[in-house]
Amino acid sequence: MESHTLEMTGLPPFPDNIPIATLPCLSLERLVARNSGEIQRLVHACEEVGLFYLDLRDVSLASKVLGDVDQLFQTAVELFDLPLAEKQAYDFSSQNSHFGYKAQGAELVDQQGNVDRNEFYNLPRNDLLGMTDPLPTPDVLKHRRGTLQSLARTCHSIAGVLLEHLNTSLGLGQSKLLDLHRLDAPSDDIIRLIKAPKQPVDDHRVALAEHTDYGSITLVFNRLGGLQVLPPGPDSQWLYVKPMPNTVIVNIGEAMVKLTNGLLKSSFHRVVPPPGDQARFPRYSVVYFCRPNNDVLLRSIAGDNRIPDPDPSEEAEAITSKEWVFQGWLARRAKPCSI
Ligand SMILES: O=C(O)CCC(=O)C(=O)O
Ligand SMILES: [Fe+2]
Image (cartoon, rainbow, N blue to C red):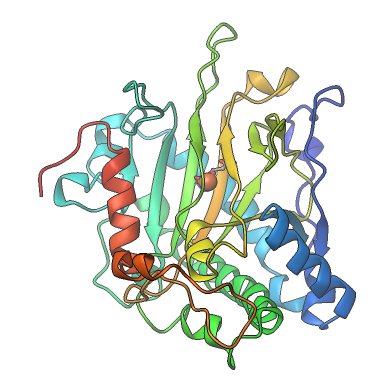
């Protein structure tokens, strides 16, 4: 179940002379085995930076995931190679949907109105798992539906392992966090396939602006560098997150910050051109966004537990997870659509 190494894909190695983030690398195998030291490291990582590597080897839960991701990197190449007009037939933004295709430049990267330089395709897990009527999709994705379904299920289970340990460490009632992230209830979980085209050397624009993720737990599969994190702290600087074989990069999102009233952290990250020789290639990512179920109110779940009590004024502002994701999407649109 070894994933293809970077060498096997013909891509150049990540350079060794650039500043990289020193992130913890946790073992899914040890977390599944309820190793107490590993659980402590998980909790620490989520309370400090909210970003870490997860080694997926040697655990049956994840036995297919690296192979599925390898297939989907190839699918992403085929998908984004389609003519623009064909891809745009799957852009559903005029129907106020953030599912489907997003062309380059459709999202803002800053307050000045500059736009992003990557394209992506969002596949809702409700659709993949048959909970909603299937959206139209290009053949290249139809042919990979089984792989996409398997990835959605596995990634949701991996997120579940992390949520279960966080639940216990926060002192929450039995499986509270798991109840907010049920696979059999609708959510805005998505698989996102991303392409940032090869960038001219004199073009230093970011491909994806600095942001924190909206949902609970994001699982990011990368081959080329380019992802950067801004660790918390007064003098911090942007650091590359070096892709590591057989691991997934785990990001804690804003929904978890809201649910835990800031006890868990979400880090700013962005995507810049791949470093060194890697800059000669387009950059693809496969990402799973695990989000709370649609009707979950994003407010602190403090009570008889470790989560600090919220300010009463925040209670009135609570919105549902679905609305939160939708409002975030609307705010990022370069040409906001009318509702
Ligand atoms: O492509 C990546 O490495 C990260 C993408 C990301 O942060 C996002 O889509 O939210
Ligand atoms: Fe992100």
